[in-house]
Image (cartoon, rainbow, N blue to C red; front, side, top):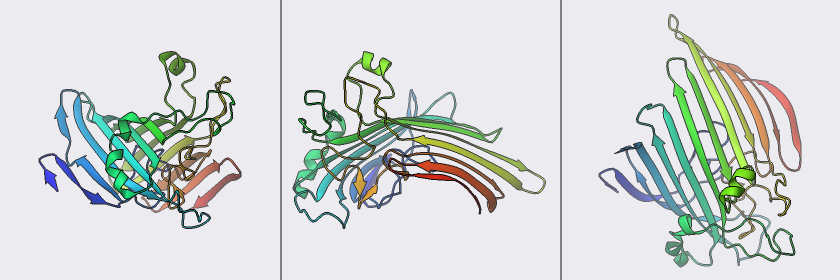
Length: 287
């Protein structure tokens, strides 16, 4: 269903938000698709600030089919939004903001009432009142993740640079933002370069991407943040069918991957990945 530059409908497609190639922090195709209704722009909208595109989804999440026999927490609502703005002075420079809010839900009839969660749900991630123990003494109503990103392409030189930065708890003041900007943060930084030979259509591609979701205690007046994608309002957290909705490296993970390829079929990958419970040593693979 479409009207001018706006379209809407029902879908369960897998989505990928943000500029990351190997890891998307908020929504990726790592998990199964979310059954949802959506409203989005079907073409860029001209504004004085640049070309604007956006998407809003409202759907339901399903827990893993294993390990949990409780019927009381099977349903969660999920509402997400994504806005991108392409700069008028450089069509190759794009900035964006994205947010996902997940809340427990007893019945599907409650879903329409969750449409405003994207703007009104900003629960604190951890307790700040005694006893200062994560999950004790506080009852957050939602689990949420907010991110900003940018992407800059230089077509003449074949270079692309991008970055995505997220937080699971927004700062309560400007002072908090300035003193501890890395509190509950996750990040992805990457670039890729493509160079070719016009005489024989051969080319070489190089990619480098770093992602970090590991959490450290940067504020000593508060407990250490929990792992990424783990839930406080719902035990299943930000998952669909037991798989995280965002980066495939999982809660508390970090990765560094370099990939080189020639003509799209011969290359090598060198990388390392670590999660909160184990680590994988660097490996090189010929593909």
